[in-house]
Amino acid sequence: MRRLSAITFLAPDYDEAIDWFRHALGFTLIEDTPLEGGKRWVVMAPEVGNGARLVIAKPASELQRARVGDAVGGRVGYFLETDDFARNHASMVARGVRFLESPREMEYGTVAVFVDPWGGKWDLIQVRTRRLADNAPP
Image 1 (cartoon, rainbow, N blue to C red):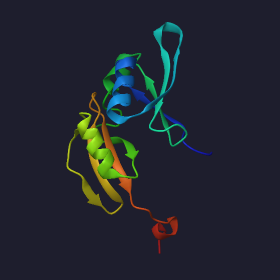
Image 2: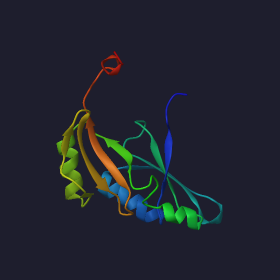
Image 3: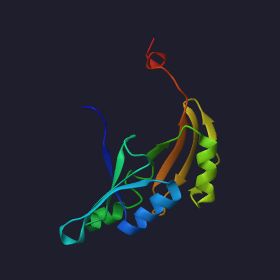
Image 4: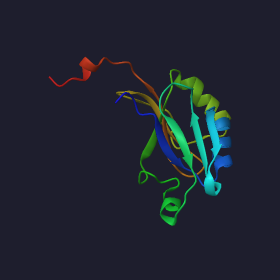
């Protein structure tokens, strides 16, 4: 295996999700292909060729609709890494992104939790650089 390429993100409406990811988070629309039955193959990413992409999926059942905004049982389910926390945090706040907490310093980096319009929790995080050997057990 080489990398995790995509993660499904449930949203009630394709266009609403595309708009939010573009304008609130600055994501790029990679693909938007019509499929049978009114479905679409919608792929978005923060940067083309850098990290996992989101496949925006419209729920097709009651079970899936119940998971919109709660894909991981109320936990943070998505982690958006930045190389400049202060810049991106300020930009997101200016674009109307709702943070649930003030930025905090943790052992692993600077982080703050925000929510998408459907209630899903995300971390905006700037990870401290560490070598893998530094994390190895003694």
